[in-house]
Image (cartoon, rainbow, N blue to C red; front, side, top):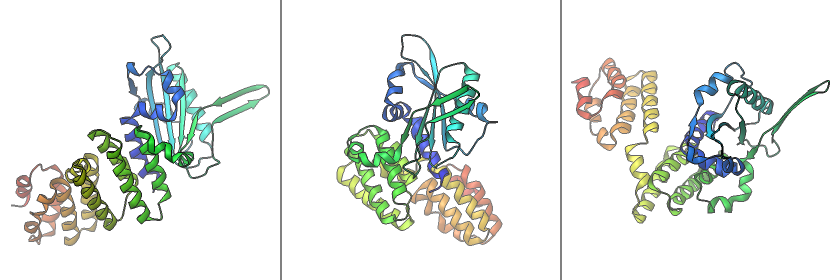
Length: 325
């Protein structure tokens, strides 16, 4: 799986469960934050600060304004980075971002890093420079996701959402070349969401992460959903299946865009029909496919292309029919 494929699910998980993320990975920092004061993501501000200081490709960067728990009304900053691959200048880049943020805000900053790479010995946690008695030394806390594989029992016992995130991340990497094993782990982790007693919204959110990072070939994906549906029916808690039928909002949007792009790129009638079928199912479920027979009668490629490019904006099958009738 590419870095980009890991990027979005981690961003979403951190934005949804920021407090739980800090509590899980960095308990010292969590203890020092006044969570009652709330927190504010400053992603745009971070981009402005580091735009001209790119020292390597970033995976996930978050800048968050929090309130310090020390009896004072004082806000500070948390710069959190998730790094999925080994990078030679990583510690230097953390230092550069730290001093640039300090220069802009003149506030205390906690720079924190989560390392999701594959090399156990890569643990960059400090940067130093010295010249003629002038010395700079910068240290920052890190966590190594690989090390959690030795604490699997603790992960299974934890109800913190980021225990699930770490388990899915580790198993996604571990099963890159073994789809059968990936399917089994995806099913186990999905069942665990119910067994831990999470609320419906948390089950949906965490399943999004699992589903995102543990992609399967179509045949195994269909088999996976059959087993999930059976499990949900047995336990009378059809949370995920209902979401899968309706489509998770962002997943639907991405799927629709993909269907349109692929159909137009192929250009030929068969390719356009495939794209239309994909988008119809994503937008309207099985009901959307009932109209496909009508569309399949259309021979004019330009009409099919117009249908595919317009389908994203329609909100009902009646509106869809108006495109070509």
